[in-house]
Image (tube, helix red, strand yellow):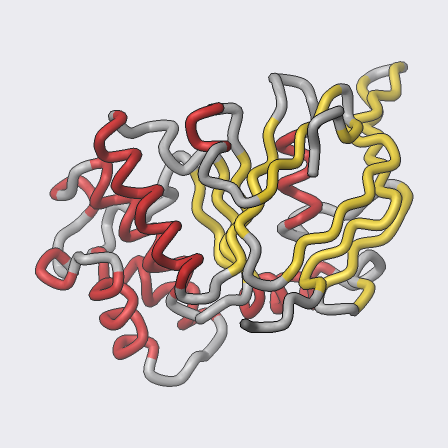
Length: 227
C-alpha cells in the first residue's frame, strides 16, 4: 500500500473580497489536508465558498490570510509566473464547460498546454492520453464534431497529459446527461485506481458519493459532516 503524504495543505485560509463598501468573507479560517492518492469531494450549497475553495486548492488564487502548501512548499507568496509553472506540472484541471478551442482538433487541444511548457514528445503524450480516455479514433475531430461526453474526455486527456499529481474537477458532469455523467465519473474512478489524487468540486449529491472523503462547506467554513 502506497504511503499517503500530504499533497495539498490549506492552513487557516481566509479569502475576503471587497464588493463596493462591503467586505465579503468567502472563506473563513479553513484548514484541510488532501493526501496523495485520495479521492476527495468538496461540496456545499450556492454561496458556501466552493468556487473559492477550488481556486485555493488549484492555486488559481491566493488567500487574504493563511498559507497554501503544495508538496510541503508554501506557494502563497509566489509570483504568478511561478504559480503557473507549478499548476502546469502538478495539477490537471477539468471544468464543466470543457474549455476546448473550437478551431483545434482533439489532439491539438491536448497538446496545447504541453507546448506552452516546451514539453518533449508532446504529440506522443497527447496520443497516449487520448487512448487512456478511449478517444484514439476521434483525435483528429474538432469539438463541434464530438458529443458532450467526448468533449469532456478530451478535457480529461488534456488534464492528464502532463502526468500531474492532482486532478481537480469542477462540476465535470454539469453539462452532460446522467448516463454520460456516470461514464465520466467512472473514468475518474479509474484514474484514482491508477494512483491519481482526485479533488471533485460539486453540488450534486450523487457525485459526492464517489469521494472517499467528503468536505462540506457552509458560509465559508467547514460544515458538520466533513471528514
